[in-house]
Structure formats: structure tokens, C-alpha cells
Length: 344
Image (tube, rainbow, N blue to C red; front, side, top):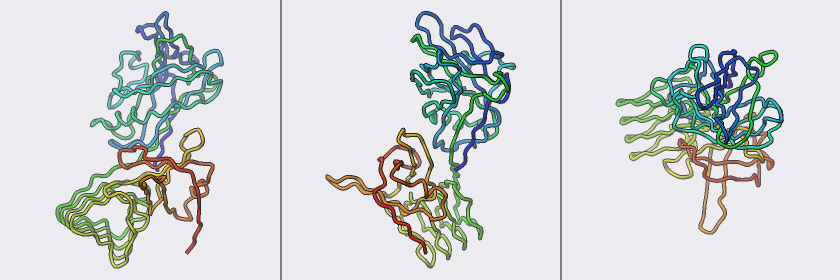
């Protein structure tokens, strides 16, 4: 799954400013984001350049990583926004934070006593999703994250790019999958080479769909067809669900997979640690079966290729979170009860 993790890379790419539009500064060795009930708090701004997330990509997870400056200022009572623009200016070209257009989406971060060191914010994928969904957004443009102090008396400060050796600037972590909208009125052919790994395709066709003679491996498909679906002579393996047809499905001469689970609904499997932090996304999982019987605990079965490097992480120490695709709604959390390793 594609990951980008840019870091603030220049002194003019982080700054702070009082919420009353005064005391702007992009030269300090720290960024203030304090909250103050008696007077105006501070807002911090962080510009990340060359953010290589395609327009309209589905954001799986995202968070801001800051190095907390000191224990006397380690209480985060802030709200995190993005700048709602296609691309943004650095703080030399636009010496302002509080008057920048903010995203409608925001995420509160309220946590006392973070301590000195690198700390991840809560999940901010809704903020990033709003930016990359803009019609004028394009991969490689710049993105600004705005962290606004609230109205309680709490002090929060992080190191800036200008601290010490210029290696302490904030990071922005983003995992995403790319959605391709492909349509064909008279057949769609991908040829003999399989589709690339770890890519999500939404495919629609009114007159047949052909993926060629070589299987499309380790891809997730949301496929809608009204007049048949053909995946070639070799079975397509490790495909994930979300298939609706009104006139039959053909996987070639050999049946590729058994499709089970809820019709017209795909799944995403995530491994999470005891704190709920993301460990891995099991994008190569297949044969996913989710069952919820009356007065019965829900069950989940799935398979994963034995050569998948994430297979070793599937242990009882991690939770398995089942989400619906493409909206990402959490369906259920599971613990591993039984694992079988089979090689053929």
C-alpha cells in the first residue's frame, strides 16, 4: 500500500501565530500551539512539500508527528485542520496562519503529559481526504496542516525545523490506495501482463470485461458489470470481492476464487496493536468470510499468501479490524483464535 511520510524541510515551512492574528514568527526553534482561557492562544502551521498522493485517492490512515519540546509544555489541547487549497504557500510567501482557509474537517487532540519526544496525533484521514478530493489537487503539490490551540489553559510546544541541526521538523504520515474509474462500452482489455499490486480498481462495463490471459494478482476490485465478466483463461487469484452482476460471472476455464461474504461489499483487513495503532493493512488477504448469526458471536475467516511478509504479524497479540470498502466503516474487531499454515 502506498505510503508517503514527508518532513518539514525548511525554516519557512513551520511557524506559529497568536489566534488574534498577531505575533507571527517562522524563525523560532519551536512552534507554539498553546491554549489559553485568559488571552488568545497560538496556532501552529506546518507546510509539507511534494506530497505525492494522487487526486481522489482513498486515505486509509494519516497522522501528524511532532517532537514535543519540553515537559513544561506537553499538554495537547488543540484542533487539527488542513489548509483547504489545491496547493499552499510557505510562510515567507504568505506570513499568516490563522487567516488561511481551513478544511471543514477537523480533529481534536486532547492529551495531557505527552512527555519529551516524537508523538503521533490522532487519526486525521478525514482532513487529508478533504484536501486530496479537491478537483485542483494533484500529486506532488504542497499541503499545510494547521494546529490551533483552544480556550483552556494548556501549554503545547514542539521543535521546529530551526531547532539544532534542522532534523526535528514535523512529519506527515499518509497511507492511501488509488481508485481508478475505468469504463468501456465495448470491452475492456488489460493484456497479458497482470495489473500492479496493491491497487484498488473500480471497473464498470456494459458489454464485457476481459483482464487477459495472465491473472491479475493481489489486487482489490470493485467490479460492476451488466453483461458478463471474464478474467481470462487463467484464474485471477487473491481478488477481493465487491462484485455485482445481473448476467453471470465467468473467471475463465478454471474457477479463480470462491466469492463469499456480503454482495456488493468489499472488505479491508487491518492489524492493530493493543493501543489501536495501525500495524499493517492486509491488502493481500483473500477468501474473506464474515458471518454474524442470530444470537451468535461474529466470526471472520480469511487467507493470505504464505510469502506475504505481513503473515508473521498475524498473531494473538494483534487485533484484526474488519472495515467495509470503500467507505472504511469499522464492522468488527477480532482476536486470532486459530491459524493454519498450508503450503501447496
